Image (tube, rainbow, N blue to C red):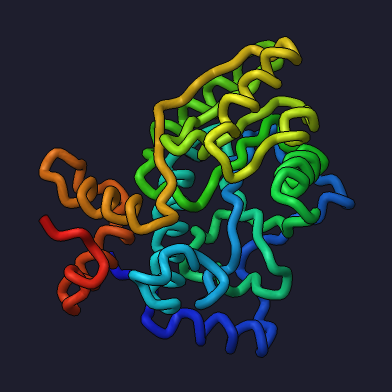
Length: 273
């Protein structure tokens, strides 16, 4: 499979300037439409522009490389989500900023829909995304990060299955850094997003405690990990090129890392034993 062009960031800016129509349907929560009570598998995303995404990976990456890697993460995550959408679910890109809808052409599958983010802080954006997707008619909602390309379709399928069961509940996909890569709900519970110490190792535990205090049944998915610094980038490189790793896991990210190495970036970017 191919990877995002080296001129991706420039193409995004050109497309935005031309205001080309997006091939993805953009949802409007103010005009409720039936989503047939599907589960929304919604990935939270920023348009992958150089200097706006994955800046903690610069260095060792360049700004352009970081944006291209971010696009690969998003393509792999979206592909896994799409695989989990065979029945009872729908893929969504919850994006920012508005006006760059065409940035997702060739990254998100055409079956995906888009929903603009709103709110200020991170917790507020998550809460509004949940609220807006329910207003669009979805029966349950999972918010998914775009920093965990090695999470498999099976984890998303487990989330959909859990949320299809009777009774109110919350589904959490824990990350090794103490956060979570997925939160799934059947109803809006704003308390899950208030008073949380975001971007710390306390996020998962605080959210779990809040769910228990709300008497919500809790389902825990397999662990994943975010790739947002040099250490986790090295872990990703080691994992994807381990002979025990399935060859179909994160193929776009894997191919991009191959191209980096072939271009002489291994010593610059990765820890070489």
